[in-house]
Length: 221
Image (cartoon, rainbow, N blue to C red; front, side, top):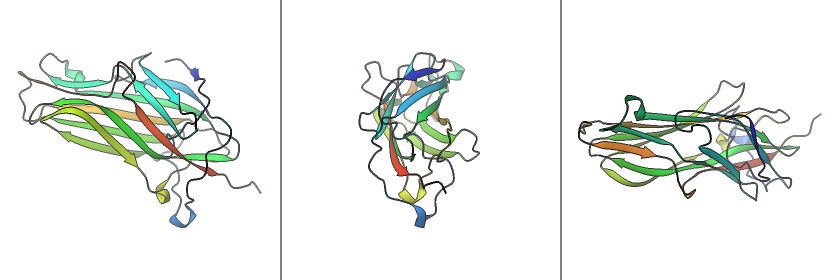
């Protein structure tokens, strides 16, 4: 996807905080009131088999506390009628978050939702990694699912305050979120059955929600 501005004036809330130097416990500050100025998120790039061009949308909440990503073609599947490459789908979002002067943000939590049909013996996995451009540290969260399952699914990535990873103060660093869905046949019979996990929504009712914590940057000497 070409660089496109998301003219949503509000909170880029959960996206950033999983990568960067972790503050020691004594330096961890409680979450503060959200910044008074509005937040703007630009999507620099969207790449991956789970989010072909035009199938992922980003929206920011009106209170600067969260943003959502909605997918329309995010489906991993294995078994009868599928392609060999369909068992794994991924999507990497490269986001430019314009933060009000004097503030920094971190990921407090991220909620992922979708629907799964896993035959008895089949398995599913949802994974997300988070990192800032130019930083080697990457935070990875993984959630496992087992068949038989034919229902909505949800997973949540959370951090304690002392484990928040804050965006560097006074620097513009793109934030990357890389998500994956993987489905394995396991002991099921892939010649007779099909298992899948989806993180998409045709009506916008299912989305991924990222919630941010905010902190004031220390004054410059």
